Structure formats: structure tokens, C-alpha cells
Amino acid sequence: MFKKIIHNINQIESLPDQFEEMIFKREELGSTEFGNVIALPHPLYPITSHSFISISILKKAIIWNNHKIRIVILMSVSHQQNIIEIDDIYHIISTILSHKVLQNQLIHASSYEEVLSCIKVQL
Image (cartoon, rainbow, N blue to C red):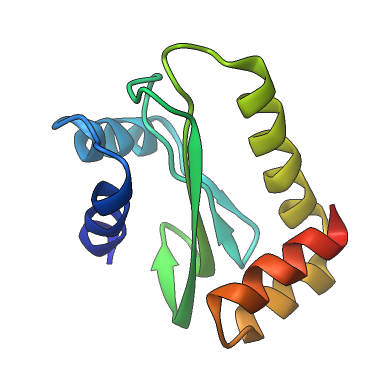
């Protein structure tokens, strides 16, 4: 599952070779799961040229350390530290994390467009 997410991102944004390794190193420090629904993996330190998030909605829950996860929000902060990008990303993530109704809508969304629409309504 993780390799597929990274492969899909790499089709749009050129990722450093050590990107996946840095995510696993960060997970070794402590799990990035939030409750029973969301995981927020990210590299140990900023290594990409652009900040981004990738939201993956899983049809079936997977066990992420101790919880069943349905939403994976893979985040990467640019080593160039664009504050506006970072603020936008944190705003989107905090909105998803704090709205259980939105999480449920995302899990039941049937298309990419519907996922975006659900998020935009809450922002």
C-alpha cells in the first residue's frame, strides 16, 4: 500500500530516493496514527523541494501499529520552508483531524472530486 502511494506521488512530484526510508525512520520514533481512522506519515526531516499532502482513502481498514486506519495523509514539508505552503497544509490537516463528520464523508466519497469537495466545504 505504501509503495503504491509513493509511486503515485512520484508520478507528479519527483521524490528523493530516500523519501520512503525517511518516513519509516520517523515512524520508528513514534506512530503517526490519530485515533482509529487517520495516519499522518511524513519524512523524518524536510527533504522535498515542494511541500505537499497526499490523501489516500482506503476501502478496507489496515492496522497501523495499534489502530485500524482508513485515511492516510502523507505529508512532506519542503526543505525550502515556504511558510504559506506549510500553513495551508497544516490548516487542511487540522481540519480533517478535528472533524469526525468530514472523516466519515471522506471514507464514503466515491471519487477524487468528491473528496476535494468535502474538504473545501470545511475550509
